[in-house]
Image (tube, rainbow, N blue to C red; front, top):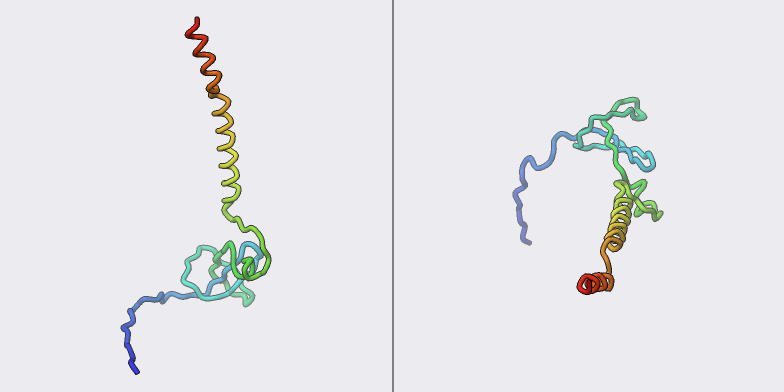
Length: 116
């Protein structure tokens, strides 16, 4: 048997783990765990102690993969922004088409100018 000894990097992991509460903004589920994430907010837990609060948009309690429910999760309004850009582009194309004379109209105007 061949054993390979690897040198582990020292001080690679954080030392400042602390107890924090993660709160899912979709369904209000709260989880008490340890983390290095910094937070300005605090909240009271069931044991009466106050802990730092980290708000998350989605967790295992509301993610469609874990819940089995398929739903559109659009926290930042990306779908709405896309629809607005599409509508603005369509309106711009229509406005441009309304301003620009057609080639047949251009030819008629040119013929009138040359004949006059």
